[in-house]
Structures are given as C-alpha cells and as structure tokens.
Length: 105
Image (cartoon, rainbow, N blue to C red; front, side, top):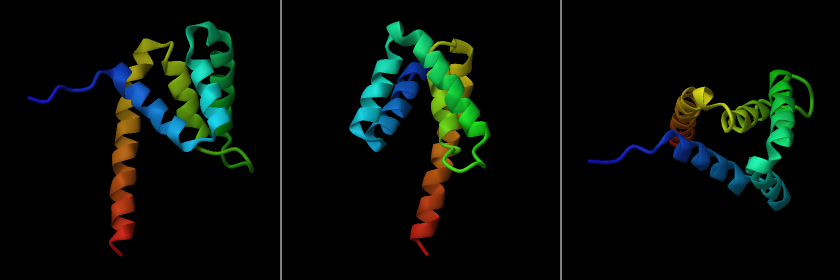
C-alpha cells in the first residue's frame, strides 16, 4: 500500500521544483520568503505575483507569476492548500502528457 503524500509535502515539492529551475539568488530569495519571520514580505510578494499573473498579457509579466504567488499565499492560508495542490498536480500531469505527445511526433 502506497502512502499518499500530504498536502504540505506536495506544496514543498512544488517549491523545490521552482527552486531547481530558477537562478540561485532567486532560489535563496524564495527560501527566505518561506520563513515564518518573512510573513509580511511573503504576503506582499505573493500579491504582486498574483497581480502580475492576472496581467500576463502585458510584456515582461507572465502566467508563471500566478502559481508562484498562489503557492506563497497558500503557505499561510490552509484552506487554499488542498485545492491549489490539486490544480497544480493536474497542470503538471497535463504538461507531462503534452511533452510526451510533442516528443513522439
């Protein structure tokens, strides 16, 4: 019987995926933001990322900002964690399927 990962573990896994794909300084900043003492900064950065993600049609801003902002906010708002993990897991699954489909052509 396989044990299902907890919602917190899944959130941490998504953060680690992000940390592996961004420059070292950005990764360090995200790690600092996740500390409990960085609550106010985390909330401000998350709000800006969500706003930037909503306006992703503008140059420089992108859709990538929305999930990161939601991840940061979900760290402090427990009722958002489960639906966010569900959506991000679904997006990850669809992305893998799409990549495999493109590679098989």
